[in-house]
Length: 254
Image (cartoon, rainbow, N blue to C red):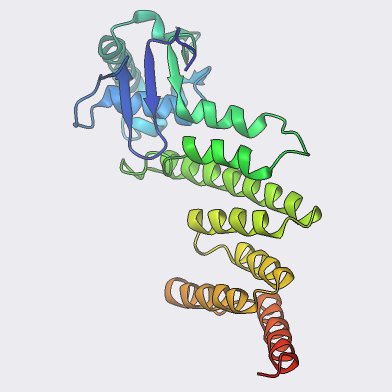
């Protein structure tokens, strides 16, 4: 937060709207609060009135639908105590970024920020993890527009983790890569690709038991939640690790 914004909005994890350090919302799911959430989900700038109406008042029609939006906009401005925090021009609604700091916007800016290829990949991911306190509106409604934004943000975070980990692999920084892949698995415990990459890094480190344990956890969760076994590539890596583990054990005289 730069210091000039009057409001802070947290949508990653538990929803919070703060004016300074004081909460500006109650615990009820008011329409103005939901309108603010929808505006953020749709990018926050020049969001069409029709898009907002379809998201928040899908059963309303014609003038009644637009009147509902106008009422919610009025109440949102009252909630914020600042008329210019929400702008409407040509049936398009925008949030004033000079008035609001939003953790999701900061997260997206960090995703796009160029990182020094020589720097530790964990540093940039660490900043993202501090911002990503949970999935988008984790404890709020699960309407389609919420689920879409939630999945998109999670996927973008996973790609950032994967890219940073692969950079570590290229530099043979296996421990750093292991930590990154583990953080990816914490975010998505059914991401088989992450388990396979984690196994490969443990194999490179000679930690065969850790690699086998990662496979077993992957298999257990896939079977429990999806009813499927690991795919052929993961199983092939598992058998390769087992063979190497057996060879290493025989070589040590055990």
